[in-house]
Length: 253
Picture 1: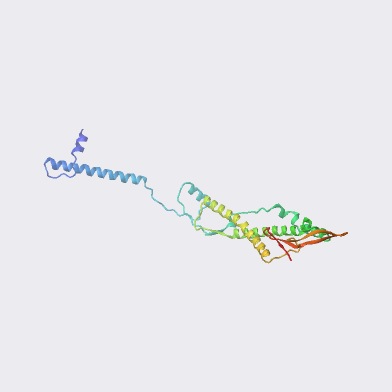
Picture 2 (picture 1 turned 180 degrees about the vertical axis):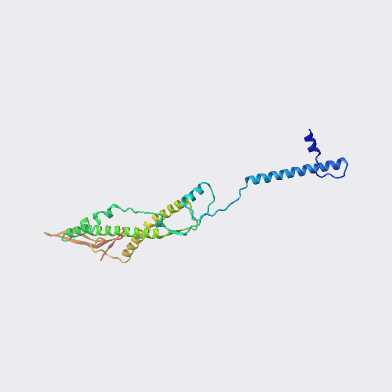
């Protein structure tokens, strides 16, 4: 009861006034002041207990293990790189796998020479595979060599391309960035080779170049018998030309 009486009668703004109204106003003002002061003190106490001061610590030449340990403990880390650019070859390894035919005997010069010698003194119908076998395997060998060369040049350019950053990247970010760059390289590599093939096709078609094997055109013959004398004759003097886009045209005199 004494405590309650003390609280009810406390007056920090006491004056010489003796009337009841003045004393009551002084006590209400005191209670209001104490309440505001207590609330402010409580707010400051809570803020001080929850507030964390940012302390900046600089570590010279940290190891990757130390960086991983600090990152695992959710520390805010900024690590400047000693080198701002690093070529892909320093941390990426790619090994292309080619079609097995490009490492077979079918693209060797020994096989091509054998085909040439076996057909050098023989005559085959133009639709017979043996009539153009040597040239087709030569073309296959050239395509294999070109694809290997194109892939090698692309890899060399890719490995010398640099990734640039002045801050240390996290492992997850670096892995995602590396995967994206590899996918881009794999997607663009065939396009570069196809562009060269398209250029060659367009050049051949545009300049109306003919092969030495005469495989892009054929004469139309028919078998006739004059009396007792059979004879192959040209049919209406027509010549059929096959284009690179698989279309054809017939030329007549």
